[in-house]
Each structure stands twice: as C-alpha cells, then as structure tokens.
Amino acid sequence: MSNETGAIILSSTPALNPAMVIREEEDGAILYDPDTGAVRIINPTAVAICKLLDGRRTMAQVIEALGERYEEMDDNAADQVLALANSLYGIGALGAMEEIG
Image (cartoon, rainbow, N blue to C red):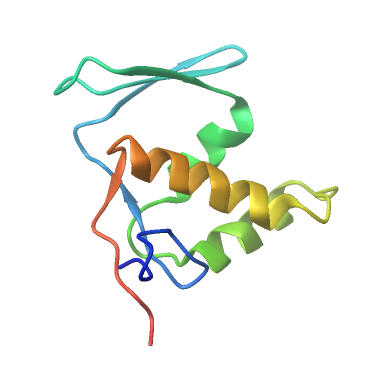
C-alpha cells in the first residue's frame, strides 16, 4: 500500500497496471493507457524500472536490482526511482501495492 500521503515508499510493492501498454523503441519506450488515452515517453532506465514493478518486489528491492544492473548509480538514484514510481502512481500506471510489515 502507500503511506498516509499516498506516496510510494521503499516498502511498497507496486505493480504496473496490466492495462498499460509499453512499446519499446530504440531510445526508450512509449507508455500508453488505453483506458484514458494518456501517453508518456519514458527513457531506457524507466523501462527497466517498469519491468521490475511486478507486485512482488519492494521498491527497495527494485532499487537494489537496478544497482546490480547499473554499476554507476549516483547517490540520488533511490530518490529518483521513488519519484518515477510516484509519478507513475499519480497517472494510474501503478497499482496493487502492499506494505511489507
């Protein structure tokens, strides 16, 4: 689930909304919501993050997996990944979140 403010936190286990369509391109992807017609362009790193948002991994585990894939992540990476997740949550692209207790 989310915290009191509705924000995704490190213990959240979000899943990409199954209705969302990701069409990968050479330099990123198009994220399309057929229910609303909303389109969002995402970069390759955001594509990798979306693929990890399966409802089984916590955000902390997603960040850890990214660290294994991208050896040179900066100190702000966790904040940036959480910001992306919250942005996706805000447009309805994420759902089925639970808190790990």
